[in-house]
Image 1 (spheres, rainbow, N blue to C red):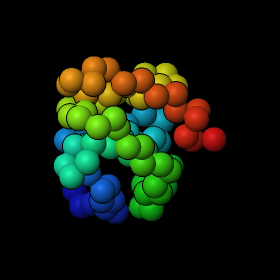
Image 2: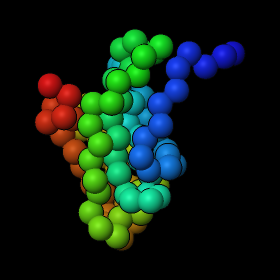
Image 3: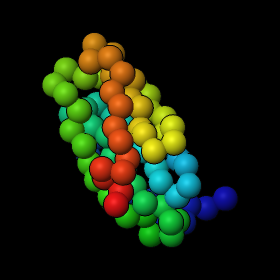
Length: 88
């Protein structure tokens, strides 16, 4: 297989989940961040939003559950984001 397109979030990605044409990507380096990407057209990914996570977060996982993105963030605990706030 060959890639159709590439997308580089600001934080080095450590985990990604994709549901219904939406990708949620988390990373912690250089700063902890959740990045939401519209994949409706896989050949042209579109940044929807980059969300800075709380200081000291060390994001290691993300899952899209219904209309929420849930981020595992070590000392900051579990962070839950309502996707409707960022994708409308």
